[in-house]
Image 1 (spheres, rainbow, N blue to C red):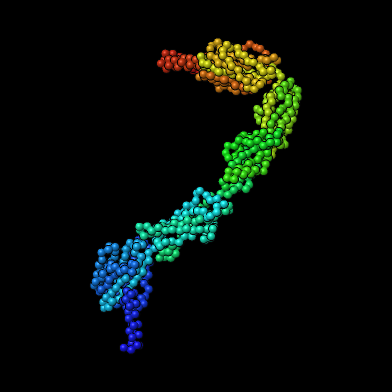
Image 2 (cartoon, one colour):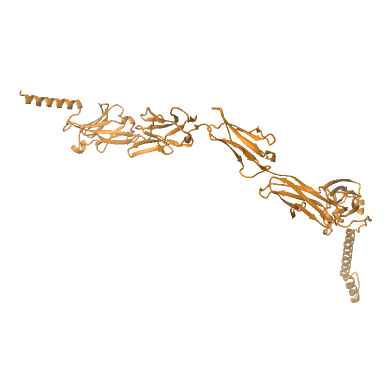
Length: 604
């Protein structure tokens, strides 16, 4: 054998050895497997291309290739299929007249090469690469609740992101304030790990570590999972989280609520604030105006002083101290002045004015305040504004001018800040009755509640002409109301009731006439009061003249007169009826003249 032939034989032998080593019969270079992509739980359709090239093959075997090991899983003979015992025994079936093998309930374990091999008329095979996908669940993110100090030497754990049950392993990307984070030496480190579940799915856990600064106290962190499905690339984002960042205090200051001008009676809060986290321990002090030394105030919370209600004594200079418990460094705030506006010591002079009728009176009002004041005078009984200013002039005083006058001192620039003072003006004179006389409709043997009112200066006293229980009540310094409980008797109906008011300057009297209630009682006029079990004589028109003592007249009984009239009418009606009856019966013999006489009598 020559050298050329020897070389050719050697090359042919080497080629055959390579083909055998590849384990694939036929040509030396095998085409790339056909790619089939499905999601977990769906059905994979594995189509054998040998049927297209050679028609209906009568002999086909299906293999699964895993770790370079072929396992027979399905046989096709004369168009009929049969599964081999094993993991695919109950999940395989033929479709498309035997050209397609259907694999149901795909799992991640099914990701491998499937091979169909035909032996007649000659041996051929077709390979299919099955790719399996599963979208992970929504990513779950947990922030570091303990917080991160800015003076840490190494990156600290910021948050943990977990994506469960995905296939294949998704890719995680971390974001801060919407910008992706990348590995950075001594600044950012991302540590990821994965766990294979019994189902073949992956659970991914990614831990973000970073070195944060003070400006990151409000930073928003979130993670993103990127994964692929047969339909293309997809992603899922977690919620955003913030992480407590600890940094030292650099500045302390005071804030006062409410903002604006304060007044007595307000609820005022003085707060200490600082730019450190955690905040320092606060204390609030107020400068003593006498000694100029700071005196610590008692706070209800760390750095909160509540003044409720605020008083003018709370005005002054306040300062806050912030003590950093880590460094034990105390930082003071700037002193802030607090002004509680007030109106106090409202005074009216004269304080207890007394005047004669026809004289004049000048009332002057004064007050203390932190702001400019406005004054006005009101009539106490009616609320009518009498004067705007601190001085009220009253001329030619009448008895009606007696009573209350109120001075109102207010600060127009601060709504609601005002104080008032009431003064009672007394006009000398004998008692003045609320009414002179009144008629009261009553029932006999019932208890009446009668009242009598009088005013005057000096203050009058009231007496009754009936021996019964009476009580007095002051309506104001010059006006008194007396109440009497009395039983209605026949004697009381005859005499009536009289109340007398008297003081050092004279006396006056009011009279109450009692009338029995009957079926024919006429409607009472404006000076009449009707009562059944009780009756109160209340004031209507005032009696301005002073009355002298007089004897009560005995009133005529209208009820008796009315009853007598009714009885007379009834008697006449009966008499007329009797005469008419006798005439009809013929008991009365009378002619024309008699009839005329009868008609005359009847007409009467």
